[in-house]
Image (tube, rainbow, N blue to C red):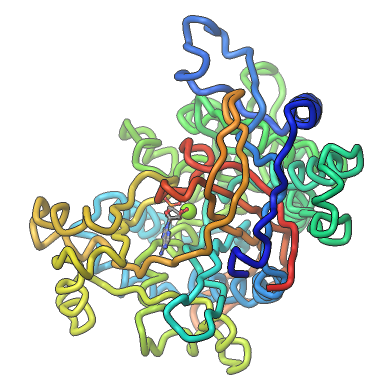
Length: 514
Ligand code: ADP
Ligand code: MG
């Protein structure tokens, strides 16, 4: 989909049309929880000291165009990606070899690994693991070739706190609603039709994943009722995204869940002698719940661990009998270093985890070249590319972090590396920039419409529940499904795409033939 194919999309709006669209978009969004807590820069804390206000989540006015073939392929390979990351999380020895390269230079990865080892020494008492994954892609266009071609390239694979599954379902319904009520001009309807809009069932599908783990936990060990525990940040701007999952889990799965701020873990939960995890809600101290599943929407960033107790809290949850989403090994499998090891050109590793050639080749086709910055041959090549300002401008440098705002882009790479002792370089990976076609759209953020060139990032959710096994037993996948999608759209001037981090907007796909 090279943009000139659809030069008139999205259509221009008269001011009356825009007013109609915006008032419907804002009201629908608040009425249906397509919302976030406003950033302090938008509504200062002094104006809203109790955090009572909510506002529309950053959202696009129109669904963005997305090539149908790329969309379908991304959804079709999600089950293979689930299988791949479940297999990696089960291969402790393979993970260890990679993690050990990071331990001395990345304190956070080191602490996660130590926490795993500590639990392993004592012995894990839960053999099941849940992954609620999201594989992120951009459409890459090769304008340099004679006939420009496009393909799907993976940005990253998320194994912890994969967010926006709740809001994503809502935004696809919102765009459909706006079409139904004629908020889009008739001139757009040759492209923008009901049959082109892609719904996302991520909210319900991810909740079904939590319900599957809850049920696989089996019989209770105590006389308490059972629950799922969402481990959350405090404060949390993106609370409504999580609430959609909570409500779907209750309404469709009949499963009770609670929100536990990560820093309260040791205060509000305890382990029984057999390491059953028990949650005592501070609001009902006489009640207690047996926790079947711990769902981390926090704990992925070093900022979540300001005190030593916070590491004790992670250890406490990891050694419990509850099913973890994710386990520490699954969390570590999501390190950018793992993605690099798989995607370094000529890497032999993918085959080991995806033995079927036709499956592995489709996954492989989505890898953009990624290099280590160590002293291997590929690493030495990459160091040359990263320190030369000319070649560095085609790359992004990434540490082993999640949540946005951590990467170093293009021309900033050489100076950044210069400021860093060389022994720390292997903590980063060097990835070729994906160059998606620039489209047009308008974004509503904090009450204001921003217009201009945008680029999209497609995320595909996956649910995978597996048994880890031990010793000679390699475990097995018990449940595996693709779980809907997310489209995030950002201004083409920004390198970062995080919605919560203030860069992107939630969007839905209007599928077109490229
Ligand atoms: P995080 O874990 O912080 O989300 P990502 O790898 O997803 O890290 O990078 C953050 C953002 O940077 C992405 O959402 C995307 O907009 C941009 N980005 C990352 N890698 C690439 C790439 N190879 N090409 C183009 N943009 C990229
Ligand atoms: Mg990301």
